[in-house]
Image (tube, rainbow, N blue to C red; front, side, top):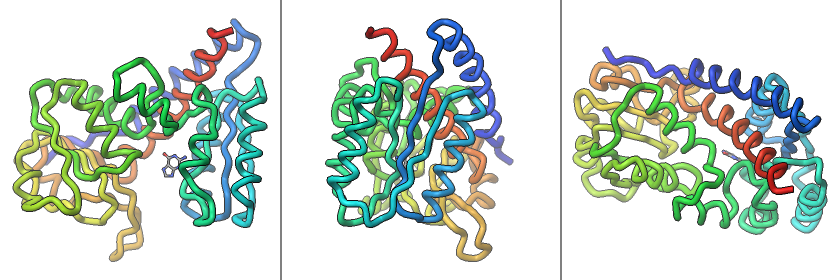
Length: 286
Ligand code: GUN
C-alpha cells in the first residue's frame, strides 16, 4: 500500500506559519495584507472555491472582501472595477475567479490586473518572470505541488517526471518548475500517442487532465509518486474524485495524494502565501 501524501496537514502547517508572519507584518507596518476576490455569477463550484479562500484568509488574519457581480456584468464594467482596485493603495491582492461568462474575454481581464497585485500569477508579466526563473509570484497550484513533493521527501533531481495535462494554470507551469528542480520532464496530454507507455516511465506522475479515473493502475510504474490535481464528481458515487483511480493506484504507487485532501488545500494555502508576498513586495517598494 502506498503512503498517503496528506495535503491537508501540509497546508495547515503553511497557514499557521503565515498567520504568525501576518502578526509580525502588522507590528512592523501597522497594516495586514488585504485580498479582494471578484466572483461573477453564481456557479456552485466557483462559489464554493471562493468561500474556501475567504475562510482561509480570515483564519490567517488576511483582510478579505468578496465582490460579487451578476453574470450580466459587461466586460467594461469588470475592467473598471479592476482599475479601481489597482488604484486602491490599501488593496494588496486581486483575484478574479475563473471561468468568466462567455461574453467576457478572460485574457483582457487577467491583463488588466496590476502584476504586483496578481495573487494567481496569471498576468503575462508574472508568467514571463516565472519562465525566465526570475524571483516572482508562482501560480498557486503548481507552487503547492512542488511544496508537497518536497515535504514528502520525493527526490526530483535527475528523475523522470511526466505531467499529464498542458493547461496554462497547472500543466505548463508545473512542468517548468519541475524542470527547475532538475527533473527530466515530459508533458503528455489527451492527444499523446501510447499514453500508458509514457506515464509508465514516470518516477513522479503529475495528473491534471480533468477526467475521472483517467489514470488506471496499469499506467503507473510500480513505486512511482503520484500527484492527482483533478477535482471531478464521481459519476458512480457523486463524491469528489481525482483524475487517478485511487483505489487501484494506491496498490502500485509508493506515495499518492488523495482527492479531496491532497493538492486542493495546498492551492488555497499558496494563494494565501502569494497574498502575503504581494503585501511584502508592495511595502518594500515604497
Ligand atoms: N478557477 C479554477 N482554478 C482557479 C484559480 O486557480 N484561480 C482563479 N482565479 N480561478 C480559478
